[in-house]
Amino acid sequence: MKDKNPSLIRKIFYLIAKTIYFGKYPSVISKFFGLQGQTTLTNISVDFELKKRGLKPFNCCFLSDFHFGNLTSERIFTAIEKMLSENHFDLILLGGDYIFLDSFAFEEMKEFIKKFSPPFGIFAVLGNHDRWILKEDLKKKFAQCGVTLLINDEVSLSPPYNQIKIFGIDDIKYGSPKLIFSTLKEGEKRIFLCHSPEGLSLLQNEKIDLGLFGHTHGGQIVFTPKKPFLPFKDEYSKKFAKGFYEKKESGFDFPFYVSSGIGCVWLPIRFNSPSEVVFIELI
Image 1 (tube, helix red, strand yellow):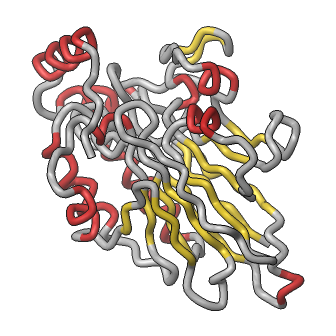
Image 2: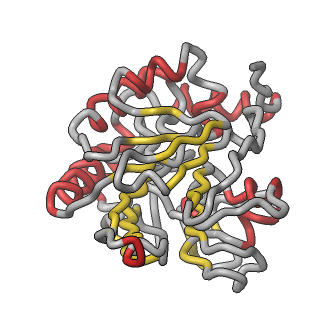
């Protein structure tokens, strides 16, 4: 699979950022002045008809846009670790963008995620930053920390929740996304895991029961809702910047959630868009 390359302008921005943001000083300064705010816990509930099958509710934890590296404060990851230790979850889903600027930061990601071992596993997709910085055998790299990487792949959970399928698609911008869905049998449900809301542009009449997206950071620095620091070009990231979108309310035939993510890019600051851990109860 040949990855798409970023533009020359983006490469120049990256080179400048790597020159300016050497070491950990940006995240340390940000922590000292409290520029990345508090980490929030969001709870949502989605009907997956588990009760009809005599099954207990199933709890998923959704994390996205870690951006380990120079800009994101370690305090945020400590807070997330505490949140996860205090809450029960059966499954972790990861929405991409694990690093910023350098591939070495993935080692930090590996050490962090190794701390968790939910009974139904950890599944992940790639984000735009991962796709053009991490060049090694990515599935092997993720497997080393107990994570199953989904690149246009679909998996079923273990019994008794094997009627739940997770489809993870490659990054929309720099990967090679393909919709290779299996045919759902009666009673089966599908979670669509994708880094960016732009993935909605690929969908037509596919059967999906819940969509999970990241990428937007909720704007990261937001002075007014219509003028976030991260100005996205695609219409879906603009329209669905963050939060829970009910079935049909958004024009799609399934509910979906867009997380504001965890880390920072370009500036080590978050304002009016705090880092977010999302707990999803499937009932």
